[in-house]
Length: 369
Image 1: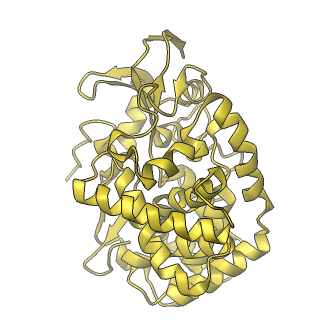
Image 2 (image 1 turned 30 degrees about the vertical axis):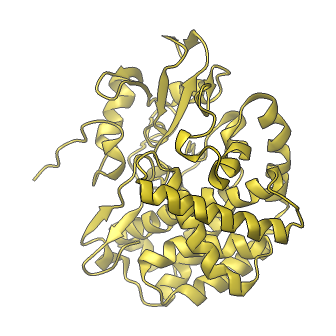
């Protein structure tokens, strides 16, 4: 029986197959206003690029730089100093340092830490493994001692949970408490007397990777389950896994959309926008735009000149793509070695509730990922 299409681009994030719907948006409504959601939707590659590179489009509403529920709390103070949540002078001041620190991470050390922790965690439930692995790996890379990794992972999960627009009062309070613990931990590790931009953005490495890398691990398992011929080749063709993960980044990305807030009246991608309006930037749709990726619906690990918008473009492009993909690769290697069978996992797949991240839940044969 044919699937009913998603009702809107937000519902699409957790739909079993949102991609035919996205393809329709790219062709018919590449940049249009969704009356039901009350916001603009950029879906075509050209529109997504235009919005993400426009000086009018900001990462936070001008009147609310920090979510109201977090103001005055440790979570709010971390949020306020995150480079990815700032524009203008603050962003220009902070971004080079954050990018440089990521670039300084040695690929060999990333692979070593990710592989070691993946093997250590491989017997965990998939529900835990996919979220713990990026946290353990990045925390270890920035100096968190091994005996503090487990509570750090819990605190990061709680902190991320309080940032969601749909967070309950209980989740918000738990996230505030977790932010306080993370602040104390990293102030000690980084020898700071109080929270500053360095501490906040070190915590930001962990929080930004938490759901996105978990989704990348899960979506790679889905891809292998749906393409068993690739699974069969992995043992003999070790480099193939890296190509598979990078195609998953494009074809079934963990981060499906992001938002931008219009800071003044102006024209973006040919549309007249007004101050205070919001644009939902559908990265997953742009990845499937035939104008930038030929035969976009085909899953092709050997694709040449791949264009993926998942990690963004422009000033706010995420510098952590290499880190995320290497952690995901290590996770998949460890899970396959532990006997996980992707073909069985995909017998039943649903998705974790979210407005922007696509993280599979496997069951009853498997478990949540």
